[in-house]
Amino acid sequence: MPNPSAVGDAQGEWFELYVGADVDLNGIQVGKTYPDVVFSVPSGDCIPVSAGTYVVFAQSDDPMLNGGLPKVDVLFDGLTLGNSGGGIFVAYDGQLLDAVTYGSSFTGAATALEPKLMAADLNDNESYWCEAQDIYGDGDLGTPGAENPSCGIAPEGKCYEQDGSLRDLVQPTTGDL
View 1: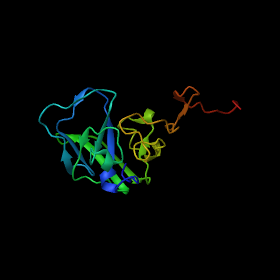
View 2: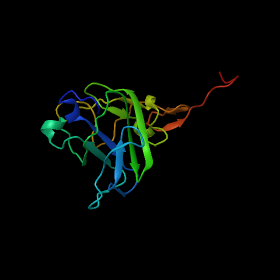
View 3: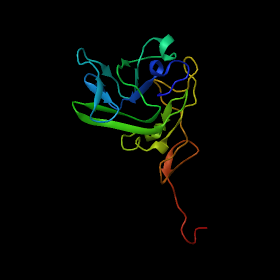
């Protein structure tokens, strides 16, 4: 959420990470352009997170200042998310874990990743992201700390079945039609 409208821009900014395995957040490094680290999660007491959860990073954990975020797991300081031409990376011990860049953002709405396309090699594709639709807190749009609803975006060469599952696109050849 680089461009909130319910509260001040810097105060209401947040991002989240999907956790794919049980890990500790201690020492996680975050910045805009790799390898320039802006902040690191303190490496004191263990900060365990479970696979399948979403970790919300925000400028403030005060709901009156952050737009009514339902939860904040990690506070970040010194990082501002650009409203256009932005990016963010996550690293550990200097090793890049994942990074995304974006050309623009939405005013008052988070940029949501298609939940079936969360792999680190897929989330770099800006066409797999959409404008969030669900209202949270003070009226901005997004699902902080929860799975995004589907954007209805299928990766190239795939299509959605009516039950929401992905399958390979079957292209017709000569004589099929």
